[in-house]
Length: 172
Image (cartoon, rainbow, N blue to C red; front, side, top):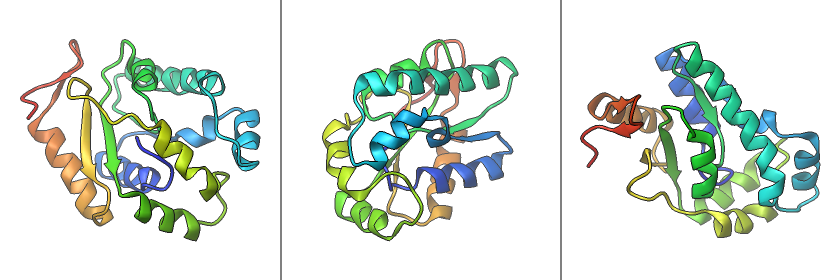
């Protein structure tokens, strides 16, 4: 989770390869109207995001029903979005915390993505930092890809999630 340009896709793909989990790029699940709106430089509203979040949740639910771990990239900027994604599912979020100036540099050098750098301020304005009671790993998004994936895997090994309570055990 996190604003556009933090490295969610790169980290998710590397983690999926390492763990052998299915991967879904959440951006690919956006309705066409959302993509067009963002491409035109307009931020999404809660109403715009609602059908997309349902599609994302349904994909996670399908993987959970099959007994598989899975990785979905999603900005999940607000607590209520994370709650919707995690509803009745054993979900662990990974928040890639990166300074705004670094994210801006990344977005300005990125090619072929529908999210224009001009929307970055609106994403940071919408972002609600995770609360302590949420199942979120806060990872240093300014490290190398390998360091971030190692950090997440080590955290998951040391703090397994109870699938019944959806709580991370021994959370620091």
